[in-house]
Image 1 (tube, rainbow, N blue to C red):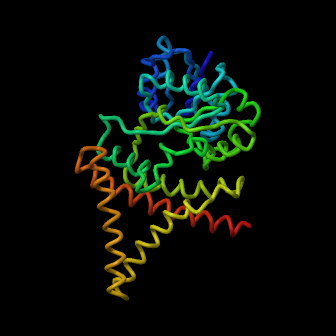
Image 2: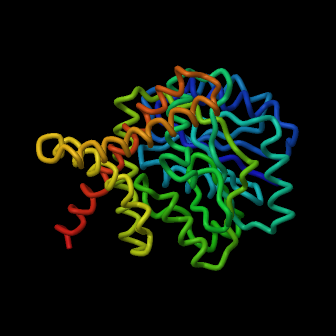
Image 3: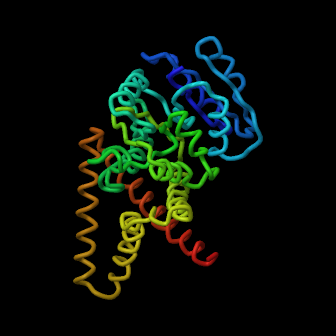
Amino acid sequence: MRFSVIIPVYNRPEELRELLQSLTIQSFSDFEVVVVEDGSIQEAIEVISEFSTKLQIHYIVQSNLGQGFARNNGMKLANGDFFVILDSDVILPATYFQILSQAIDERHLDAFGGPDAADDDFSALQKAMDFAMTSFWTTGGIRGKMKDPSNYQARGFNMGVSRKVFEATGGFIDPNQGEDIEWSIRIKKAGYRLELVEEAFVYHKRKNTLASFAKQAFSFGRNRVNVSRFHPEAITLVHWLPTSFLLFCLFIFVLFFMDEALFHLSLGLFVLWSVGLILSAIIQTKSAKIGLLSWLTSVVQLWSYGLGFPFELIRKIRKG
């Protein structure tokens, strides 16, 4: 078997249904599906039953261990030569596996990471959150486009490894704190070829409210520091940029009371960034509403990450 799709699930049966439905219409069909129920109260057994005749599907129920260890257990029982790891809140385009299989063969990949995108029927807020997570104005576009695809660090919502890589490296060593980035770094250190496959994107149907989106971004900032416990080089200058942005915004507020000239200069720079971001979002999404929402989600994403990063760094220093 070419692929085994590994999907950890925690209290999200309806989300899983949409993902499984997208798997039934794939143009490439040499794959199985392994769903790992990670200690859920709302189990997905009824959803699994709906697709038992449409997909080659295996259902594993375990106590709650965290998504990293749930994926490990799924891969241990999988039959494929290549494991594709997906989050339950993604939907696949019909040509996903066809594109992925071709890229693996042509580029001789041992592992891969793929980007995320927003589908046309997503809500305005979902599209704005997608922009905030993928735009040049916020993340530098590092989640979806890179000059050198070998520099990519795969994310657990859309990544994959060969059976050989899994057996050699042992899979995830952390349940849920940047575990995907940590494994990506370890895979490369072991000499395996992991690259971004830009065309193998998924539609990431985030169910976040603005508040939960902020909480998630705060966790992302903390997770980067957690990865540095295993790989000190995981923190680079770019990871300080959200914190710098947060401090710059606070600096503007302070200057209002202290230095009128510097206040206007700093505020002007913020306005230029805001206008550039909004116009870029409007052009990309063809919607003024989403453009304005993208400004809000981008500020929330940067501020939250920018707060989570030093928060965890201070905790790390205190623990020694």
